[in-house]
Length: 402
Ligand SMILES: Cc1cc2nc3c(=O)[nH]c(=O)nc-3n(C[C@H](O)[C@H](O)[C@H](O)COP(=O)(O)OP(=O)(O)OC[C@H]3O[C@@H](n4cnc5c(N)ncnc54)[C@H](O)[C@@H]3O)c2cc1C
Image (cartoon, rainbow, N blue to C red; front, side, top):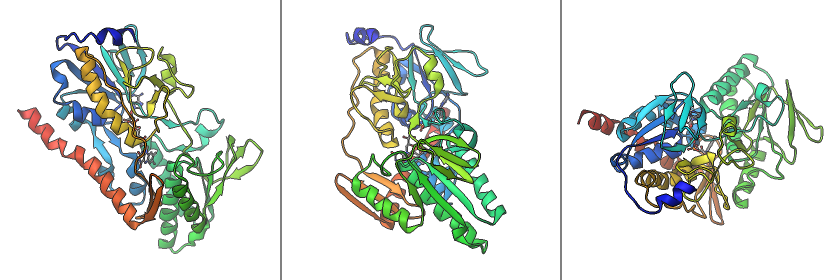
């Protein structure tokens, strides 16, 4: 806060600032695209992230269904960094010393920063439920989830018999996954000449209804779809612990499983708790409307890992992308020591949730709708978003050779 108020004097500084971006999620990827021209007069950019490719999770169900290839759903971070003139460091950040202004990354020398931005996303909370880490496959990180799903798929075909799939979490990703798994796995069994009804699906949520963060119309449409596909929905039951083969709820209900997936509310990485950053009750970084930390000037957070004080901003890619535009500008302004701009979240957005192969449900304002055309709309939007990054790769080569 201190540095932030000094900055508002508007004095300009030489281009010597080190801006370090941790994580290359949707927020940073899009910010890098936006920053390429403007920031270099004032600072050098370094991106530290653990994977060279960032998956666009909205397209994950399509990848599981074989509609998309792995390339279709990934943003190439190395090409993006070349385009943005940023140095790329591949590695997992394990801590930050905010006083010494150093980022610690496994197996590397500490990385010095003047301005820091954190976009490390979120993962479903498996820490609070004993046994969940050991027995369930979490939806994130996406690469581990995909490996877990393909292994479960192979086991289903090997066993050629009854298999019970359980997903814990009744939000958008839980519903998308169970609908996609139902389509994909029943089609697998049918292709092998086996009974598609041999695989069963249960969605378990502690909430009174599925999709409670979405419009009632959209949720009601999914309730009907799940019933029509024979997917069991267990509501109002909180998973207390997980044993081999069974989830035990608060009230003692035992939900048996053969394959277990975890998509409950997001939580932040535990290492953030070892920094001095102000965090909210779920461990996300508390930020002002400018995305600057409430406790530390020149430290920013964006995307799922950011928790805006005094307002609810959904943890969704669409918000991460919108934040990125303001973030890109604010990082430049911070380097110039100029006043920062606030991120103002939009009230309504187009909600599009896939129901498996080539079918989706959408809502905007009070209106909900569904059909193949909704899936095609989502497909066009999603492909267009990732394609926007792919166009940068040849431009990056031009930038490099210029
Ligand atoms: C199945 C599914 C479907 C979804 N569909 C939609 C949708 O249709 N619309 C929508 O708006 N949202 C959707 N979402 C939510 C959306 O994916 C997230 O809100 C969005 O990805 C968040 O972006 P982010 O920038 O916060 O971080 P992320 O995109 O999650 O990326 C985080 C990055 O940080 C890196 N990282 C993490 N920890 C470290 C570390 N310690 N060191 C270095 N790097 C690190 C990761 O490797 C990754 O690159 C969906 C999510 C799921 C799971």
